[in-house]
Length: 142
Image 1 (cartoon, helix red, strand yellow):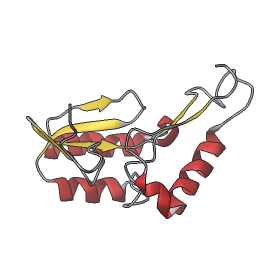
Image 2: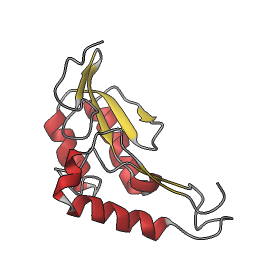
Image 3: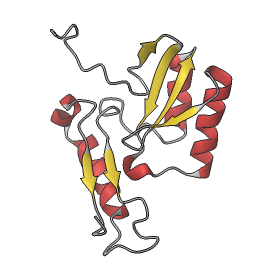
Image 4: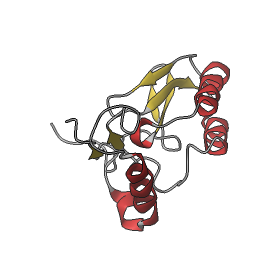
């Protein structure tokens, strides 16, 4: 089957996918890290501007469906600290051992997640990575 798009169609918080139920916004959570306040903010966006649910993706990100005001949602997402780079927002797929630094494992990879995210956002050429490209960090528990 021939590709019908010239660019990567993987959604983000700024470049969204128009689904049958409205705009689909995907928020990258490097290493799956999110604070209670940030989760509450996403919940409010989903309730006030969308279909009312949050979905966890296979790469540990969160998506919101049926968003009616994408610009307003993006502004709130950025204000919550969940959009550190407008140019690299779709390529910050960093998957890490979810219990790293909390229990078990050989080392705590959480500091590496933050360093890798900053390095990705700091390299302009990496903005061209596909939205499905991911980095993976394991703490030794496999």
